[in-house]
Image 1 (spheres, rainbow, N blue to C red):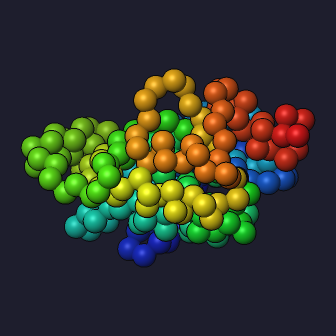
Image 2: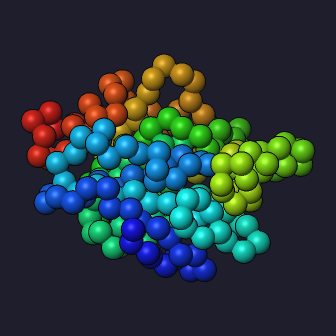
Amino acid sequence: MIELRHGRARLALHRLRAAAGTPLLLLHELAASAAMWEPSAIEWSGPVYALDFCGHGHSTAIAGGGYTPELLAGDADAALAHIGGAVVAGAGIGAYVSLLLSAGRADDVAACLLLPGRGLTGGGAAPDFRKPKVEFMTTAQRMTGAGCDPMVAILEHDVRPPEYVARFAGNARRVVLREDGASRPPWWEALRTLPNAAVERGDLNECLRRLDANSPASG
């Protein structure tokens, strides 16, 4: 495990596989950790890394909470700075963060793969801060049971309009949305029509092979 620093947090970056080639950085869903990725099941020709976001896994919590997708994007940026240029794949909240990272660091992220998962179920056409407190507390209890800082429960819902993430996505080099037929949140739907985005319906490794420069399927 590699220990990184981002602001007040100590982050755990896990090297799942050592190899030559383009690195793959994996970002987990809400209430999970790098442990959600099974190294032997990931088909990638280069090195593979997985990050624990702050408040999750082996990374430290943030005193007083204050978790936002942008904060987690800073976590991922610290990991990217350590490993260099990469392809990034994320599930749920990790997908959202993958998109922010690939847009903000377009020179370093060749592509991002967005996978369904828990986190940011979506907002409406305008921010909505009226989520009942009881709903937050129920979610916070589930987060504690999952070994997370309960304050990460704020990441269960998105208060940002879909246009927010769509503007970011336009700066990314390549965005791949893996879909499984289930309904997707508004922020995800907003990405489908962008010229740099494509929808894939294969399994995880089929999508990864299309993004792996050393895989025959990438052509």
